[in-house]
Length: 317
Image (tube, one colour):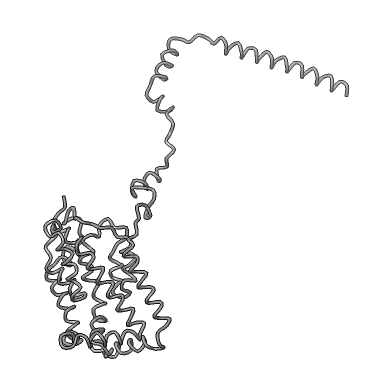
């Protein structure tokens, strides 16, 4: 046992001596390096002075390529909600429509709206609602999205939302569908390039005068076949009294009337902007608002008539 301990101590001392000697030699070699040959000197100079050396020393960018790509594509990192503004007027219309529809549905007499639906299914052209004027409103509301499209689609480029699905939905849900788009819509007073900025349907159908006149005839005919045009000419006061009495007892009647009124007001509000895209803003001054108001004289059909008579779009500068 003593021999094992003594041997271990001796080996430790010898090892320590070797380590110390190695450390001293290493220190001396670091402090006094061996001189470089001419070949080694030239290689060191080439390496440290080359552009690749500085390229390797340059710190890499911490930005992710995917993040950079997303930023370039979106223009900013905020996405949909960046630069989003809500138009309070169009938002108020939407809240009014939803509020009226909800309130009337909760307070109407039982089965009142169902009776209207059954009458329409039995005879779509002459459902016998008890008011010829309401029959006209009922027939027009499914088509009013088309004249609205003639003033909305020329300014569709650059909007936060694509108006097409909202316009299609308006034929069923009215302003309940179109409202969210109108809330976020921003004015487009000019079209930079008519050929490039307009879609095929807008350029070849909505801007086509044959389509515009056909749409006007279809909407105007809704007032004729219902008998509303004749009733308004013969007895306007009695026609409106009959209309008011009919819609007051039905949630569907009231909601449809409010919805149709809002859609027509929205269309009229877009006419001044549409005329500006056609170069008539400066020349007409206040007349553009009179033209807009005139579209309400024959609701829905008036907006279609405007689209048939308006001038063509011009390229913006």
